[in-house]
Length: 304
Image 1 (spheres, rainbow, N blue to C red):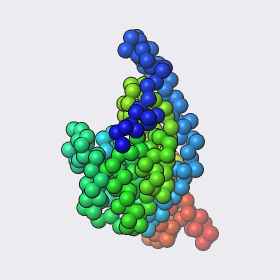
Image 2 (image 1 turned 45 degrees about the horizontal axis):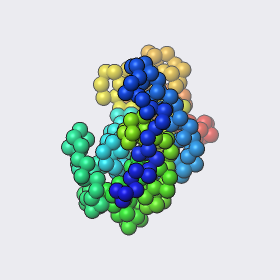
Image 3 (image 1 turned 180 degrees about the horizontal axis):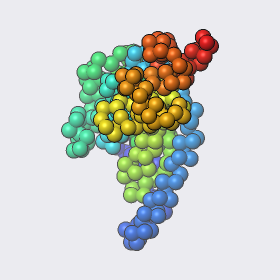
């Protein structure tokens, strides 16, 4: 496996940054920026693959399963970052989207590079969280060849969980283990082999797309507002009231009133204002539509 490392596009030398150590500060920044410009275009070429992966993960969550990111090093940290942002942003339980990194929690801030070579360790880590066939496992590896990630996908396949692989090389090894492979080719890094740069950015962008799309489809967004935000402090309470006012086009005073009448439930307050229905009726229709405000509004309008 080591013999093939130098052949990966993520490990190639970038001719556009050959003399970066001799550049001015401005030119270093310009070179990095120029290289970063192509990342979104590379991802654009893979939207169909990302769509298929998002739908698989959405189906898992809708049926009570989970989305599990698994990776090593930078990739593992990116998975943990995306997972950790879902509860405060969308009000979901922490178990719904999880990140697992080779080497455990300590590897988040201190590299545990040897852990990535252990396929069996990934299986053990997934068994610890009681992985089931209702879950989706998303393997992350810029090089597409990390044994830990391969082991995790192999185990997920064994128990018939859905599997996604995100890499930055063609015909990746993790892609061959996944039902939904995504390979985004961003080319050689500005600093040779430093895949925390373009490859890391590409992975982060795809994870943003996956989790955001899934949460929108789960009804966590109304129009383009985070209506399942958890108003756990003063700042978030103000944001919640602002969301109610903006999405219903009502005065802030009225939004504040309904915010408290609804029990600080943004979705419920919005539905009460837009429909004129009682709190109990709005609760009922939100439950029927699995928390989707747009569908609940349509259902109430059809009733009336």
